[in-house]
Amino acid sequence: MEELHLTKKDFKIDWYSSLNNKHMNCCRIKHNESGLISNITNNKPREDNQNEAFLDLTEKVIKWYYDEYKIKRLDLTDLIINDNMHHNIEERRKSCI
Image (cartoon, rainbow, N blue to C red; front, side, top):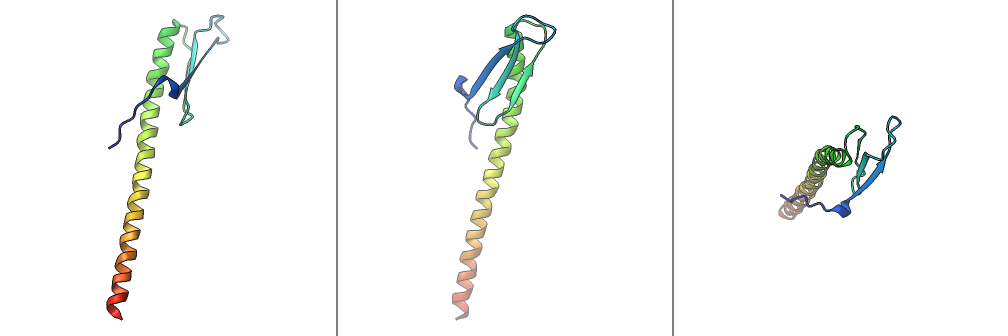
């Protein structure tokens, strides 16, 4: 099974202020490949909000990644089965001639 490797380049981090807070400590992190986003708007220090956003987004990205991997794997399995069926059908045709 493949492993998931992420770097800072895989994410975009934005800081903004909420309606109830004049400080720019709300954190929005986007995973570029999947488009998944995590928003944390707690009145906590920036570092706490960023850590919480990354934890939330990490769970989403891991689920997305393995769902995508299974879909690709199933498609590959279908292709192999279809190719083997085609081969078996050709062998049967040849044996009937």
